[in-house]
Image (cartoon, rainbow, N blue to C red; front, side, top):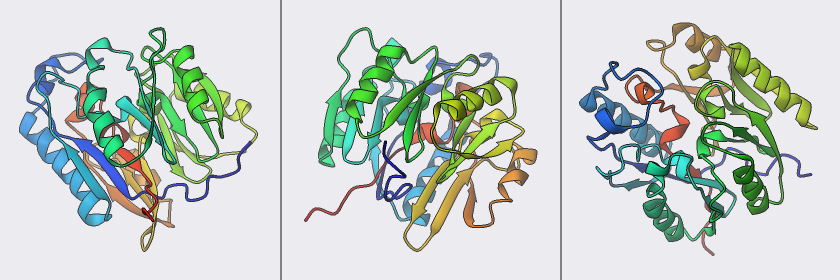
Length: 284
């Protein structure tokens, strides 16, 4: 199968979406509803996140408008999986979220990506369950993603091996892991997270290094490799997860950017959830 994708972590564009007021009371959540989301704080957090992507890192940011009828719409990652110049429009596990794909499809078409639709009514797939390592895909089989969804993803991205991993706790595979660099998996320290990592290691022909953080949610970070910036990692703040934030300081070759996510996490939103990253070749 393919070696490390040329340009792994290179991105030119990010698609993000605004936060509707309906997020506060109507977003899907696994945490207790008495943990209240502060809307203005959540919006300030999201603005800071978007500013890091656009102003600090120089990506071209496509900002889609919030839709009050779609309380979870800020979590754009679940609606599409993009690799190279192909975009798979997913069929989210939660039926209430399926209309989020409409605006996403339009934005991806505007970027001239090849669009693949997941039309099989037996398939479900959330982008939060998809970990692309630059060499292969791991797909979490969770409450939101099933085997058929994983098969359709494999069909859309034929250049890469696709392995499935049971997600026994947490919402998505990336609720407790993400890529921290080429060949480096950041993983939470809980038993379910460590079990999932073991399965990924057994299924892969490649030996991945691991960076274990004490808090599962802190294992969700965004890795990029950008011209003039090198290795970049957006990760949790020390205010949210002090012990995990210390672990990231070991990555001496990375530009480390702590990004606050204290409000969106209350409705299961992690850092990767709020953007779809794209590496668009210059139009010749």
